[in-house]
Image (cartoon, rainbow, N blue to C red; front, side, top):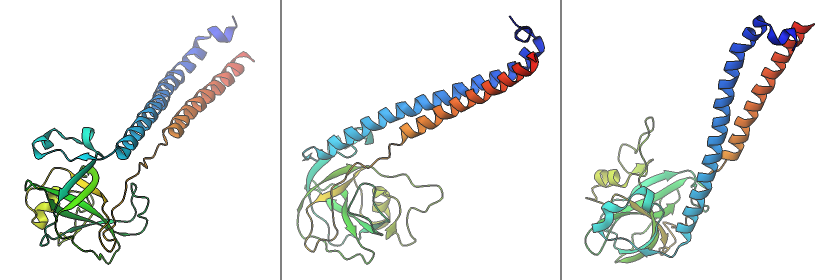
Length: 248
């Protein structure tokens, strides 16, 4: 054993940086492992959503079951329903620059949210589809057989208003608040993203949803593991230099 290996001053000099290095390595490696776990979770989520969206539509559950529906068990469920859009109901226009779930929506415009009355008298808010900035549309007369996806509201942000002063243009998907402001009455706790039918004239333009979730977790994991390797290399080089100077 060399003298440097048993030199108390050298060991003390390496101790504190070594402890900090170990703590840093533990944090960086745990972050990398967490990102790998997130990658696995995200891949499972994408596969699950893709299966739900491509599944044949099932009838919208009756109002007696709505309390059992949650975002976890019902988001993106493919459903069918018959409803009628009241002609005197004022729609709400949700501004969009582009849609992460609608590949056909790439220009600024609006999604038209409107109340739809079910045969039992209950009201469900329906996102009827996309319209350009000038908002041309026509309200269908009579009952409509709708196919779409169950969606859940967004939470308003801290620094962004959920709507304009008139309550006509919105920036947050919040059907219950829309109903309060626009006078639609009591509505379901969820809303429907309409997939079909396409109305006469083509607007609002409904459409299918597609899974387009970011999955960059492998890249993040490689970054954290790379930082851990760099930290270990820097400490090893620093320790080797001190060892060398102590032995010469």
